[in-house]
Amino acid sequence: MNKKLIFLDIDGTLTEAGSNVPPESALIAVRRAMENGHKVFLCTGRNPAMLAPVLKYGFDGAVACGGGYIFTTDEVLYDCPMTEEQRVQGMEILKRNGVFRTVEAKDITYGDEDLADFLAEASEGNSELIRWRKALAEELNIHSMSEYDGRPIYKIVFMCRKHEQLAEAKAALGDQFNFVVQDVAAHNCLNGELVNRKFDKGRGVKIVAKHYGIPIEDTIGFGDSMNDLEMIQTVGMSVCMDNGSPLLKKESKMVCPAVTDDGLFKAFTELGLI
Image 1 (cartoon, helix red, strand yellow):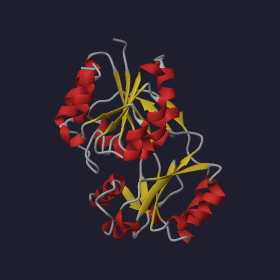
Image 2 (image 1 turned 30 degrees about the horizontal axis):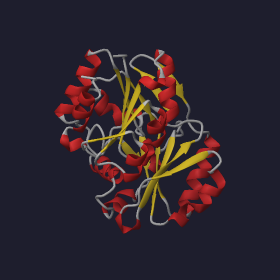
Image 3 (image 1 turned 90 degrees about the vertical axis):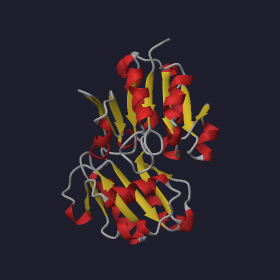
């Protein structure tokens, strides 16, 4: 078969939400696929610092920061932080509307000081919230917002109670940023992120495919939440995990078993990658 270019979301796809340890079956699948000549990239909203614990398992590179920073094992393919004006405007508007914020640089994440308290009340039904709660609890390089030192920022992650709290920010920045809101969890808790309209996971797929000279029809993407949508819509074969968003399942060509049910291994086998 033609050599494939495989893209894997992390939380809820490669690993259980909030975990940095993939199931052994997933690691076996990735390793065998690479031995068969396929390339495997992480495709994630995480910045390089937060995906480092997963990179150690051996991948060909990553589409990180939701597509804003893309790299192979030895080369940076794309690097697009937000402007200082965009960062200041977005942060000020969200703050005055009572929205909890984190900002992601390449190598560090900063969060509002009271974010942990907010997350402690959040539902267990949202994989992104679970990841952030565990990351804060384990102090995985998330620093206080007061420590921010002016380094380039790629993404603002927001959490709030009501859609209305985002209205002013959308009006001011909606032409420059896509407000990606996750499925609503219990307790009327919304979480999502401001993603620069200059990039997304789908365009990240195209950049990596062009770099290796691999046709889009020979790309495969695995995801579980709506922040994987552009990737799912771009790749030649789209796969949603059974534990994923019902909306993403409708957009995907294939649904594979859950991450906790050896989903990647079974899907890699069915697709002839291993």
